[in-house]
Image (cartoon, rainbow, N blue to C red; front, top):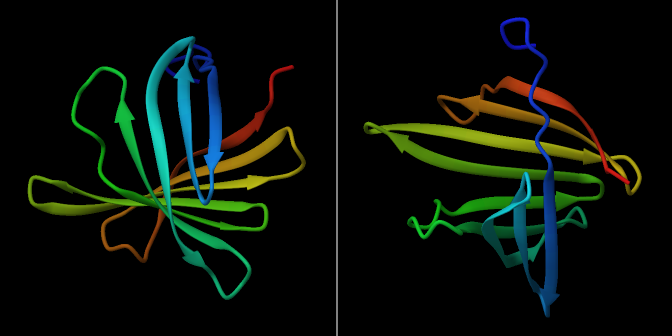
Length: 129
C-alpha cells in the first residue's frame, strides 16, 4: 500500500530472441516498448551456471544504461550493477527465483559496500494468462 492506496499494477512483457550464445529482449512496460536489453555471454561457471554482461538500450533514445551482470544458476537469476551517485558508488541487485514456468519470487536489494544488502522491494509474480 502507498498512503492507503493499492499498489499500481505494472504489466511487463519481454520478447526475447537468441542468436548463438547471445540473446536480447525487447521489454514492454504497460503496453509501451521501453528498451532493448542485450546480453553478452562471459563464461560458464563451475557450478553449472552462466555469466553474462547486460545493457539496456532505451527506446526513448537516451544514452544506454550502465553495464550490469547476470548470473544464472538453475532457477536463480541474479542481476547486479554498480552506479555512481555524486561520486559515491552504489550497488544494486535483483534476485529472481523461478518456480515453474509461470511464477517468480523477486527481491530488489541495495548496498553501500557491495557486501551488506538491504532488501527494498520483494514479491511474487505470476504470468498473466
